[in-house]
Length: 446
Image (cartoon, rainbow, N blue to C red; front, top):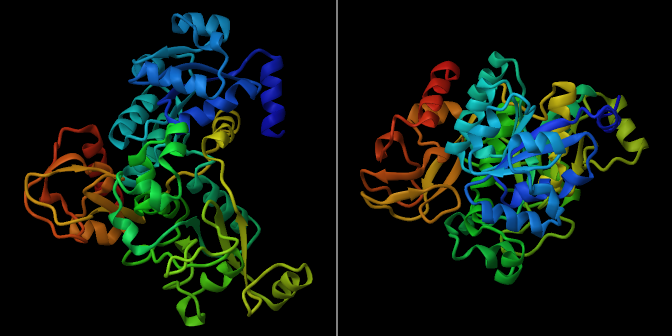
């Protein structure tokens, strides 16, 4: 039975999926915009450190005023209303909650939220892909131990890429490459929250109207988020990553099957079976017509002449050899699509993307010359950006994962463009996220 039919049945039976949302920022607000229209789902609670900010976003998305007026969780469950609280633990620990949607964007907090949810028998849809990038394999392992589902969030590009890879493999196609699009020029890795909107393509007024966080959006622009999301895809699918960071080859949708071939056949890949990101800008800054900037794609190979001829007969657009074909979605709708993950984990017990192994990592890399005593401000900030590397390379160099480069003091200088290692910083080794990361490396590095 389809997810929607199952949701309708849940509604008729008055047995809705009971959801708790942690973090009501931009992504969370987009999910909130859809919940009142989704049958069989009750958003019982929202936890946010800023209740006024959460209420502002509820109003922004047109949330019914009375819906968020529950005075307690008991009141919320009795009346199908929503309880707003600063206490995330109260939501996670309540036995009536089925699914926790972690939507804070703070990787260190997200790890704590996920682990607590597993301990209390909750499925987790983790929107904070930064947390998945530095310890997703262990989070998936701990969820399985607890008998619950841990999942990437549909609507975000990693889960959509995983879906395309799953389609390809289930159909019997070998995956040559998969990934997302991005607006990229090499100097964007130096971008800060002060320069983000001009480079991103929005005015400050548009950003303010949408309640957009410049640091968060800068994490997309400076290459951190593409590296983070490529890491999540690699760890979930087993596809490998470039040996020294993403290449961002420029290409239109039409040219993706041409570009995403091995170098030995005229493409850019080191070998078949890799993750890559396609740029929507030529090297000189010209915009590429019909780009894949906001989309996702997978390139597959026809291994026989018969399949190659099928591509031709059905007018599938391929590279000039006729062997490589790219399927794509040109857009993703971010939080507006998270309901797919909520329904999938609750009704089918299936993740929409989940780490299987530790293949890739995102290492904090200096945006400028950094001095001892400076405080790192994480992805999208003023000090570091995230570089995608094979996990084996990161483990060998002792790379500092970008997800842990938050409010950490440097103990020695680091040159611009240099990737940081553990010895460069004074890390709080009591942080749950740090301990989880170390446990993951011990378990998966081999």
